[in-house]
Image 1 (tube, rainbow, N blue to C red):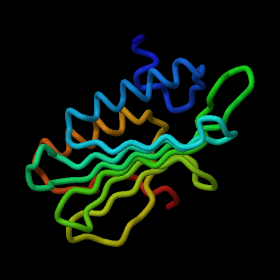
Image 2: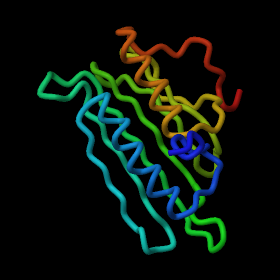
Image 3: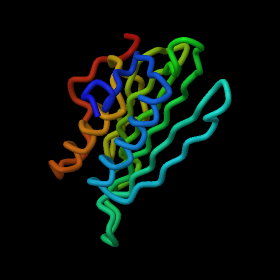
Length: 158
C-alpha cells in the first residue's frame, strides 16, 4: 500500500478502495500494540463510523493502557470518503490519566490532557493529525513508562 494511504492525512479524502486498504492496514498495524477490536458501521450510508479499541499490551498480559480511536467520515460523490471529525484517545493506568486529540465543532482541533493526580480535563491547542500519527504519539508515551504530563501545553483559549 502506498504510504499516503496508510496514515491518511486527517484532512484528506479517500477513494472507496483506498479507504478499505487503510482500514485493513490500520487494523494490522494496531495489533503490534495489543488486542484490537474494530468497528466499521455505515459502509453503505452517508456517514461512516470507524473505531478501533486496543487493549495494551494484550496477549493475555495485565492491562496497562487502552487506546480508543474513532472517526466519522462522510461519503462524497466524486472524492469518496471525507473525514468530518475524530477522537483519538490514550488512557493509561492508573486512571484518570488521559491524553486525547479531537477534531469536532465548535472547537476544531484540540487536545485533552489529564495527569494521574492532576487538574480536571482541559482543552489545549493541537493541530490536525491522522489516526496513525496520534497512535504513534500515544504508543511512544506508553513505551516511555512515564506518567501523563501536561507541561508545556497551551490552553485552547487563554
